[in-house]
Length: 240
Image (cartoon, rainbow, N blue to C red; front, side, top):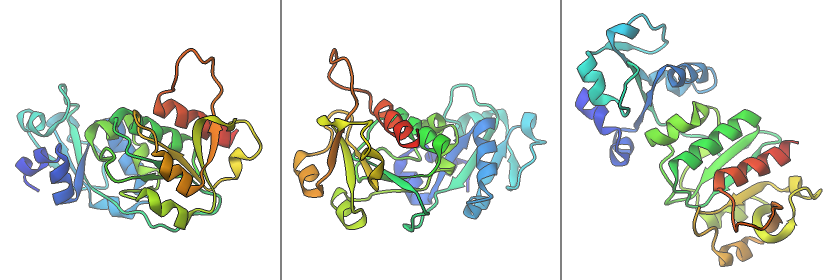
């Protein structure tokens, strides 16, 4: 891939066109290399480094570029001198035994999605489904905030909300009038549904899905939690 094309990968339409995304910095590249063990398709990645990182041990082809060229393809103000061009990867729909599913409906904030991926990877045993019109998980801000978790969480994109009833026999959601999160039934569901940061999930869709509502108890001083915080609390409760 030409350097001019690599720079274009900072934009969603070119990530979709070329089927690749950028991973930048030593920590993320190390996570990428670790993930090759269970994602062989990632071996098709290519590494671009400056002279300062020219001795980097990598299972990928390595190309040395100038500092100026690195600044052109980097998404950060102070490049670390190492960028990987990584193929986007598909995940089969077959669930592993005991796996729980988190579904995000039209999540928009890259930081929220990255944080959620990081939490799911930390606890393990979760699959992530994203609805159409969600933020691109290969957005550089999502990749950075996930701290490499994007390589360790099975993730399906563009899953319609109305497809959940066909795939899952029992769905849970959050609602101010729901059962307590600590109730015995919370851990019995197959899919945990979370809505858009501002709009939540359409009430008609929740009714059609027959989603069981649960509440995260709070002081009542404010009306809502940050989306990533709500997901984190639910995932912790499921693993507690």
